[in-house]
Image (tube, rainbow, N blue to C red; front, top):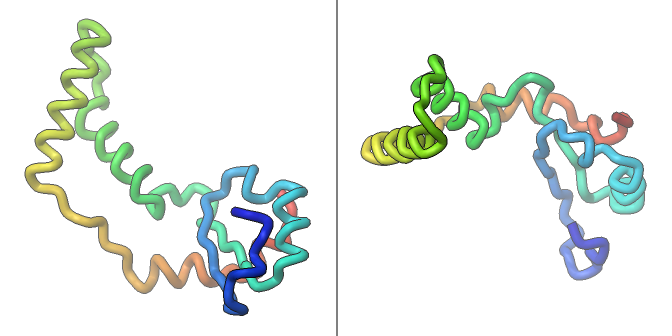
Length: 115
């Protein structure tokens, strides 16, 4: 995030992040201290299901990599592409519920806790 936020309206911003350490580093915490309008919320630890990309890779792993039997790197690549092609034929958005959002929003002061 750009350190120059003077042109941003005086609105409170809620920013949802995963639990990557870089989001809780000293510089980030210092920046947040100087910019109280920006409030970081972190997905609960071990809740990768909230991150839709991680959810998709989890599905890929369960559906195609349960038994890792690949003749070559090319075979692995081909099987991944086949899965993507099959997935895209019936693709649909992942559904977040009010419970999903409430779980994240239940921790409004997470940004104050050091990693």
